[in-house]
Length: 198
Ligand code: VGL
Ligand code: ZN
Image (cartoon, rainbow, N blue to C red):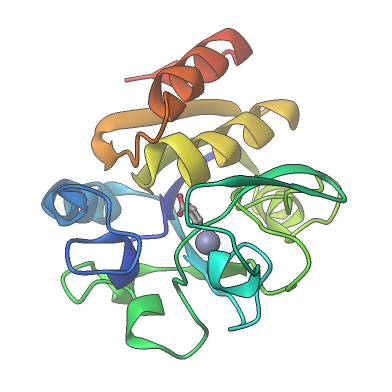
């Protein structure tokens, strides 16, 4: 059986200088590159939004970034405009070993639904196809690294547990946004779900 390394959203907009920068986001890159060179199967996720995406505060009159709104699928945090398809901010950081990626999964393309997880959009039902890919490749365990720990990494890890993969998150190879307690809450949810935090 195979272990997959899932490298979540190591994109310019989540690194210092980017539109939704995660503090010290780029500092994980050397460790992630080492892990990539040791992995059987390497999957990158890429946040990839249209400019009119409903998670952008700019698309809601009178709303600011980091406010919550109610979407048809539940509460949604509004974000600064980030990872717009084809923009420099949406590109992978220049130092990550992109050449070693076996597969790149894009997410967040549907303007009406945000997608933190690399498995499902935030409605929890629209799949990206990643589960099928992992099953077909005989993957039994998945290890997550990347940005941001409290959003896309955590949501992806929680979905992976639901599909009975053996799931771990390498904490030193992640950085968090940590907005309004989001990091503590993500850690608690992952622990309770059986994600190994290593
Ligand atoms: C992410 C917020 C919005 C992430 C993506 O990669 O963690 N967070 N879009
Ligand atoms: Zn996004």
